[in-house]
Amino acid sequence: MAVAKFPDFAQPEVHDYNVERVRADFPILHQKVHGHPLVYLDNAATTQKPRQVIDAITHYYEHDNANIHRGVHTLSQRATDEYEHARRTAQEFLGAEDCREIIFVRSTTEAINLVAQTYGRQNLKPGDEVLITAMEHHSDIVPWQMICEEKQAKLRVAPINEAGELILEDFERLLTSKTKLVAIAHLSNALGTVNPVRRFVEMAHAKNIPVMVDGAQAVARLPVNVRELDCDFYAFSGHKIYGPTGIGVLYGKLALLEAMPPYQGGGDMISSVAFERTVYNKVPHKFEAGTPDISGPIGLKAALDYVTRLGIENIERHENELLEYATKRVSALPGIRLIGTAKNKAGVLSFVMEGVHPHDIGTILDQEGIAIRTGHHCAQPVMERYGIPATARASFGLYNTREEIDALVSGIKKVQEVFG
Ligand code: C6P
Image (cartoon, helix red, strand yellow):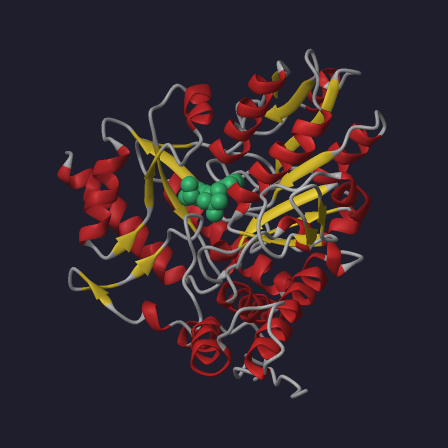
């Protein structure tokens, strides 16, 4: 059998964090929008892709494309090897003990739905409770609402304070003998709050309650080690960590995954099928029915390698400096109110401006070449908590610069001029 070669797409060698060198890896950044250099500050929605990721996907389609786990021919072997290699990369990236604990899914959203529809359906009974928090994204609310409704269980919500931090005493009080699962965001997309997940896990585990962590915003910004966190499930999306859309990862502790029923039925998730009885495949294949996204994990692997080479601690430091600088400059402007002022924040600066709808801020900034997100950020309960319909949100990535924050501040001043 031919041994697959995994080409090294010239991953950056990083000693000092050099943002200009990093930016050179991202072709999309080098363009003008409405006559201005693009300032991309919408990284919480999705990140841009480095050349290394684009090349890995192109290489796969130009050389190795075939279906996986099915063929004896060379291309199928190569594609299978690359797909499974990506699983090991994701395992190492998350610090998981076993690569069978890594399930490839479409996204964070699909990972949460998978757990709700398998673990949730298997374990929830009428009167049981699922505990989430008031800062969750809709993806970490609606799947739990759906399964709670089906199983006549109750969704409980741990409140947050004015700064956007969870109130520990309330969280602990809501952990009862009825609670069957806790689901919390590691990093809030609307507020930027970083939750002390390890502490929440300890509190929940003291009552034998498993914890699912929504890591959509955290993986690209903070070092994550699922064994240190001791969480039971962890979910993230490739597109938020400089990888492709359409691919995500669900981490689950092996014993839990093995005890859970499959999510979807189809090819590859079985070991034998007869009309009388089907025997399911082992974990992780039990949860990967049908032909999966193959180029997705390959692109994701390149992205995780990229982030690892740069060093997640370096990225964290770089983004924290940007957030600190942006917070200082934006909050000094008149008529601005920051939404989310937690002590421990990362990556996200949400704000409102007196008398101006966030959509108008976003539209005027776009005319200056600056991309931010405006709206409820799929976190309507957060908006309700603060009594606002929407915010303007700048979110940072590993390629952003202080000069881009200066451009944002000039743009906001322009908005204020337009609205008098
Ligand atoms: N937040 C944002 O602009 P998907 O769409 O499945 O890749 O990720 C869903 C999701 C789940 N949890 C959190 C904390 C998130 O931030 C997101 C995605 C984007 O904030 C798009 S709404």
